[in-house]
Amino acid sequence: MYFNYRGFLKALRLALFGQPFSLRRWIYILSFTTLFIGFTLIILITRWIDELFWRNLNQVPIEQPVFIIAPPRSGTSYLQKLLSDDHERFLFWKMYQTIFPSILVQRIVDRLADIDTRFGRPIEGLLDWCEQRWFGGWDNLHTMRLDQPEEDGALYLYAFACEAVYMLVPFIDELWEVGFVDSLPKEDRRKLMAYYRSCLQRHIVANGNSRSLLIKSTNSAGAVESLLEEFPDAKFITIVRHPSQSIPSSISLMLPALKTHSPEILKDGPASKAYAKLSAEWFKHLYNFRSLVPKDQFYSIDFRALRHEPAKTIKALYKHFGWTMSEDYSVKLNELNKEQKKFKSKHAYSLEEFGLTKEWVRHELGHIIDDLGLETTQAPVID
Image (cartoon, rainbow, N blue to C red; front, side, top):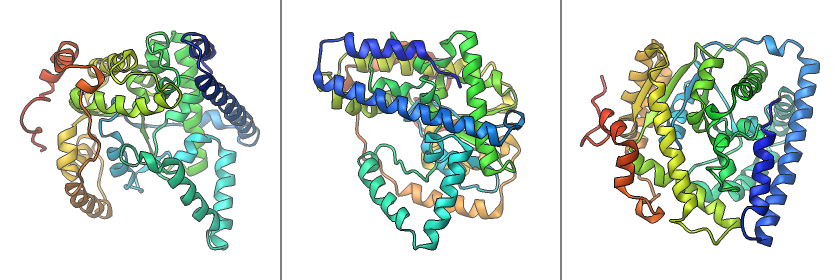
């Protein structure tokens, strides 16, 4: 299992000694570190047991996985929700499976779920209550539930190569490779992808290999080249949302976590601007990636089209990749389309509140905005 120990030690040093002392921050950092090490040890042990009982794990084929990759707050969760409803075609990660990427743990959870059902599902009721307490405050931003589709961020986190680290340690420039995997040394990238492949292989063994893997990964906005090297037959779906909308939205998701341990951090301070810079680089990286991947393996969706015409957008996606849509899924998609038309976001944000300007966005990403037509008055017409 790959672990970015250099990044981990640097992050720990910066968090504890790279800024003025704060007892509150020290308690948060050391508590997280203890929890993180504990969970990582559990994963190491359960993965080791997996290899004892499933000896051919590394020979499990992964054919044409489908990656949904875009910078955070671009609509990836919604697209994952739409596609994961096609149960005949796709196998996807649930949150608890990303937290415990082990065949052994998934087998135990499945057995406990069977027992719970026999006794009227008391454990399920308790978990529902806990989830509301743990995750309910995030529902307006990003709904999270243990048994619902989730991205692969936890897999990267165990390797300490995940941009979620910045919610605890806001030293983005110093820890650039943590959120931008393709900037890691080549050998580290190879080891990280070998570990990542092993997680997918475990997921297939635990859930069956008759369906295509569907993986949502905002964390991979800076890892697409590594993924293409590891999975040359993969299909990539990206969503393009105007950076003036997605960048402040993603900052507004990060800041509350930072302020829990460092309330002195300013909304329009260096941390917000550094994260905006990272987000801009993700946009550039994904834009340049288009020229590296065959056209029949890549599909780009305009966020506005996904928001206003989700059914047509998904049907165009299926047509591009030559996928057949079942009648049941088509009916379900049309129902979801009606629900989306009633949806209104309650999440408000602006560039200015984070010390950013439209001029800065233009300077960084103007050529991409123009080339992709993100400032046209209407979304592109879907064939």
